Length: 356
Ligand SMILES: *Cc1c(COP(=O)(O)O)cnc(C)c1O
Image (cartoon, rainbow, N blue to C red; front, top):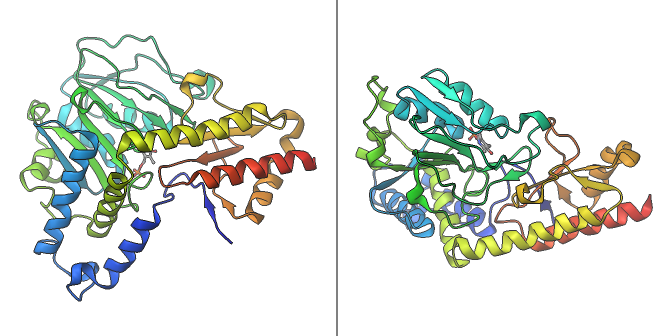
């Protein structure tokens, strides 16, 4: 049976990515060897790294003065690397979900953190607007898509201080004005590659302004100097990332991907809004994520939630159980998910509602 993969992360990758990664595990770039058993300093892998960096620059229109890095440690490592490298006295963080909370916790190890706005009061059910960021902070950190709660900011905010963004779960789902940011980072396992690599786009001018000593591996300048090859990089996830990037380019780039993503989300939100059995957890339509759609059953049907997950399973629909901090369901509609899978989910919702 065909599977419809709605997992939140690690999550669906294009068949192009999966097949080519599998091929490279057997025979990498016609070397007669697996990509798993050759030097990352050989010309074949250096070409992979170069093309992957180049394609990120091309797809996101990265201006001069920025570097593209592929680092280990996950997005969670960036929660400490960002303040280590940028925080002198004070930083501002938007508190929009669990990942933002985790980022704030790390930043507090390095200085003061101010929180200009938080949606914690309603279990992060909306994306705050209309806040003021103090002028005296070293940077302002946002989480553009709150993977667990299904809220998203689909624009690049205008602020008077350097901007830093965790784009782990919505990178490559829209054109981004990179020039507005000092650092953008994204764990790969949501919209790019298998777990194990984190994409970082960093502005060179933003670095070198803190007085503290930075451990070599946590200093962005180390990785910039060595072209993201200071130590052995996560070779296989980077290869997969390259395949996804080629696939994205072939699809027409991020503006085309965005159209497709918006269309998918619209179909699912419409079904939720028209249903008497399901309701969305993000009430403000402007805050709704097009990557992670969170919904629950209305109080009247609440006890059927588990049964619906099982019902979906019989139709090959997997990964829709909501995060434990929200409950209900979460359907992740990352770039590689086809419209056909959204339609299968909507069909299942309609059929289940009719049957009860
Ligand atoms: C998944 C996720 C993370 C954590 O990523 P790791 O690579 O597991 O550290 C951080 N931020 C956001 C927005 C995420 O979705």
